[in-house]
Amino acid sequence: MMLSAPQIGVRHARRLTGVDAVLRSRWPEGTALPDEVGVTPAVSPKFPNISIPYGALVPETLDGLLACGRHISCDRNSHGFMREIPQCWITGQAAGVAAALAVQAGVEPRAVDIAQLQQALVAQGVYLRPQAEAEALATEGAQACA
Image 1 (cartoon, rainbow, N blue to C red):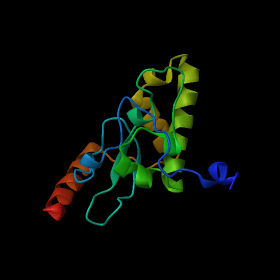
Image 2 (tube, helix red, strand yellow):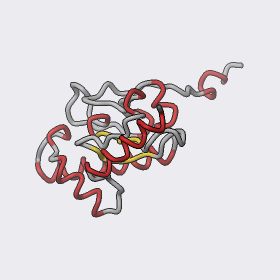
Image 3 (tube, rainbow, N blue to C red):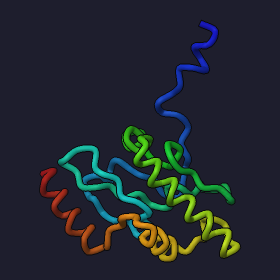
């Protein structure tokens, strides 16, 4: 009984309050956000894939830090799948590349050039959606949910 507290763990632990967030309200849209750093498969076939914004990794006020994995900024519904291992890989890679770019440029992580970050991620094989493709997916997703 004495060891139950440190061994139990918590499913919905502390999460970052970020500049942006992965939000349940955006699931049906499927829109590629302008600062997209990753795309996660949808939680259900009725939804399009979900865009992960860089702002979900950047703390609202604290400088010099990026959060990834289960600690990113998201609502409770989104946290249910954003804490899974593939999504942790996606956000971990994005945070690592952003941190490297911040150090190279001598800027805070929140000041990283998003286009440069996206270009570096794509060069590493990360799938990011072009805006036109994302808009088409959003239209399909909205029709499927109707």
